[in-house]
Length: 125
Image (cartoon, rainbow, N blue to C red; front, side, top):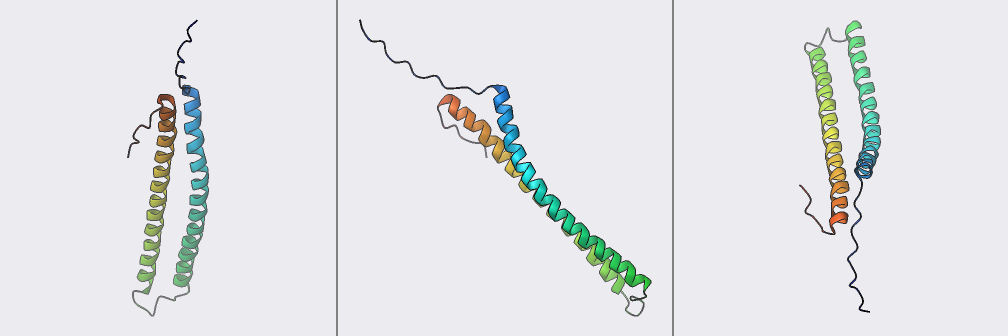
């Protein structure tokens, strides 16, 4: 009896639920770490901003700005600059987190596609 040719092994396709779970796991890992980092940074900055604002108020009440024209405005401008820098840094950290999420989700999906097709499909940029 002739031997039959060996059929290629069919790739294992992930289920939609498995793929969703893998995407969620990858995203959650990044978000849990980055949110903790961002929260710690934000809390630190909020304390500094609050202390500086209270110091400005105390200096005003104590009359510290009376003899130096423009000093209060300089401190208020510094406080405004600190707030702007804080927000810009938060925006930058959020953009980094979004980029990490993009990369992780693309990696999960394209790895599943590669495994299912047996190919190395080009990844999006």
